[in-house]
Image (cartoon, rainbow, N blue to C red):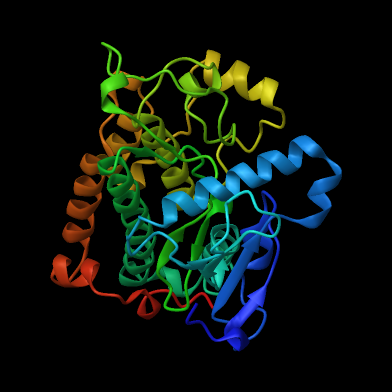
Length: 314
């Protein structure tokens, strides 16, 4: 397959596979092999679900090409459903949950004195907005290909060796057919799909939905990136989440220090399906905010492969 076997770290797959296994364990590993975990075979339904997830991911990654989506380098030349089927992915060196912890420490820990500088605070804020912008661009790209991601959460976001953010795990992604769009612009799709804390209310309730379900999930995640806190951290069960957020309309509270544009963007993303902005609109709003704050040409700043110069978290 044109890949040096010495550069490959052989790993196995379950729902938390990437979070646990694609982080750097040695400098020599450039790629990761993802396959269904052998122990899944003891549970027939779990095994079938795992195989379907991996087959779905392989099908999407075979055609997706975006700087902020993990790249599939190769795949088994057998059938998706052949025992031992695998895909070869670029290796990640960090994941969002770990990065959030590093950001939290950077903001309030040993570097707290340094953050008395307005310039330092601004640079740190722009760093996080840039990660959000890159994620927004990846989702906008997917929507342009008629794909809904449906599982945006910190555990499905990683960082490569350069510090560039990557979305991975496409097991729940869904390609939509515009011809099946209903009059209200939504689709009849599987409900209760994704992670409840980040799931759009209409998906939680198994109602019809569209690409803006990703917009809602993104804005919850973006709030987390801005606040460096877990959204709804006081809510411990899915039933409480449903009562408070889905039925009660509770949303993460924005903060005045983030500025009116960012607060407005998040609030718009928390709206009902028909009133949410597209991810393309979210990208543009984030780009304008970064441009306003950055001392550099925003096109050069955002479009170069760079982020290690900002991300000193490692």
